[in-house]
Length: 306
Picture 1 (cartoon, one colour):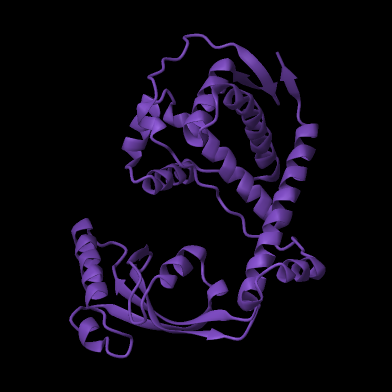
Picture 2: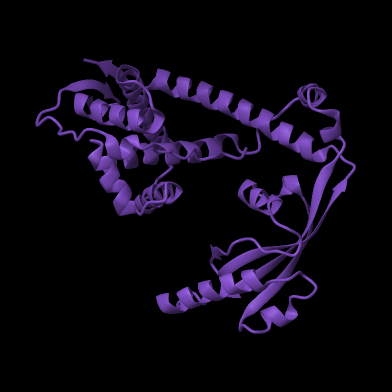
């Protein structure tokens, strides 16, 4: 099963929220496996939910308490099965959210603080999410089955024209090599050269003169790939490309990578829509199994309301 980390999106409420100052004392409201959850914890998570999901304060408060209980239950299960989440994993997830909302990590921290939410409140939520995703990956990977009859039933509900065609892409990988120990200045130079290559690239067959102007540029054939075989982010970008163009440079362990669209064609096949439907059905079944698993470990937990 492919598990997705669900990103948190922020509205303008982050910067418009009324400043908040926490209480000096906090009363314990719930104890989960000997871990206390205070009214301050609930208030913080409630504000985070309000900011990120546009929910009313009353609904957010109810959800915050249950979410915090679930987080402690998930973290206890993570400890039981040997899943450990490092601080770097949490920080990377936090930084990814900042990039998604076009902020630096420090700007995101300030925006949260201006809305009355400590950055650690979001990081605590992220830690539980990461741990839970890893637990689910261990428990269910490769075990999510979808009945063929369900796939056929879903196919019958789609448009007949869509069922009869798929898109196949002919792709090449262009890598502007950057050594691991390269300086920041050299990396910046290679990033600039990558963008220059992308701007001047004029097709897969005539790219030699363009690429020859730069050192340490590697071209690797990928070959023909169906649209369903591509990662979603890459597929979305390639769908917008004209034939003979490159995707935006992407940082990899070996340098800056771009994908060249050398050709595309429609083929008579329902594999694209079939794969998409099968993935959707697997995701639904995975979500159902995840809920059942969480209910199971909640029943085993010691939860005391005060």
